[in-house]
Image (cartoon, rainbow, N blue to C red; front, side, top):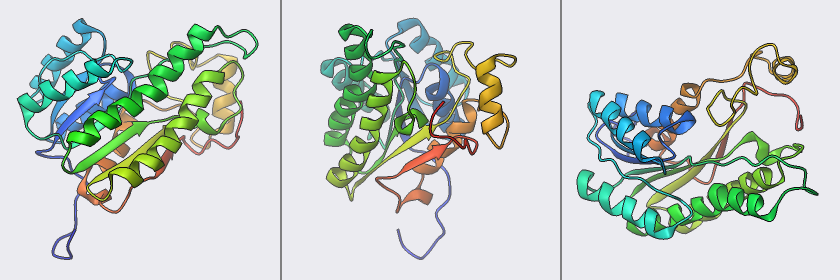
Length: 256
């Protein structure tokens, strides 16, 4: 960047791919990008959801293409890049938001469940960073981590391990891909998403504990995470890389 102009928080005219972009935080990010003038491909394994999301993005003025993607398969990610680039041109932004959450104590978790969480939440991010990092000339990669990366959470050994790994991978990828490509992570706190189900509903014991420990006294909505993604993808973050941005409402405890 030069001193001639103040960079703005905008992704207008940029081309973005959001993996895990058909629900929850990924969906909110895809829509925020589109509403700010970006062209967006929102992908997931669900073909019907991908088609519906493509139609919604078009209704917001974005150019897009419907492409499914399974982050557990390298060939699937390569196909996503190829088809997105063929439709949009050079890709400027990648968001890794695909997720899986297994729930079991470490003494009871099946190896298949562990493998699924690690493969989806960590190795899938590696695969996508590798594929897009090889092809993108410049731009921004944003990995969706979790506050759980630094928490001692019961019955979440694979998820916590994977998200901790995402933070480390983000720093290493930033070193490898810079200066052309910036790589950052977002650590959401408790967010109401389909993946969370009804866990954070008002009136539950868990929700009461969360509200008590959070200065904002509530959980987040997905679009409250999306603003951070717009910032990190924009030229306003041109000197930000290898960072993890926590968005947790000020949550004040390292465990739950």
